[in-house]
Length: 305
Image (cartoon, rainbow, N blue to C red; front, top):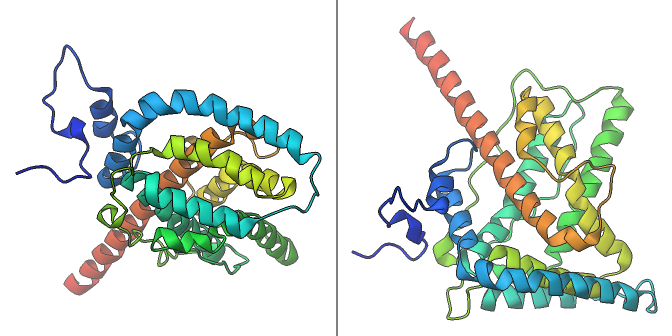
């Protein structure tokens, strides 16, 4: 029986001590909290021929385009923007050329980001409402979801801290954390497009789309989008304060939020942002299961008594 199409090839090869597979080593490693199905999809995409042979050529060309577009933007109206066209191009490219694993990881990112913000907003001592983004298919991205994702993040940080300051409190956890919003996103790799040309890996796709993102948005929108990546530590700190687990911050690494970085590395930083979100969501899932186990154990002791 053949293995499923979404199963990485390195899982079906015998281990050779004289030529160990680095992807197998990363998959078997348990130092990070990623669940097996996510790690398998991530590593299959990372070990693809597209990433090995296309990305090294695509990345410098994409960064050159960013520089050239920045020069062109100095001579265009400051408010020149075509967000809806941008999202249609992105959705079209993802649907026809990007690998199933990459598309699955992209769609689930919106779900996990929404859940994480909801977790913090619900459990903060000054609760704030959030605006979830939960696309179920690539076509849903056409509704300006990438821009809305960036706006949600900045608006959440502003509203949360305004609420904390208004109440004169700092970020501290409640007596019992509410994990009701934390769940596995209802998305399947098998439902992602799997045509002949759906082969481009996640990192190559991001590098390719970043100049398009810059071209079709205002400078302000593009700058805000790239610097939203600097808030990974900020969101990580909020979660760590609620969980009383500062050691989890080691898994969140996009550099200090008060030091904006060049937009040239936006593609690479966006990949780190995606992985950081996966890590934090996995940790919240672990804590949710732990809390459920403790509640069940306590209930069993009461029943036994």
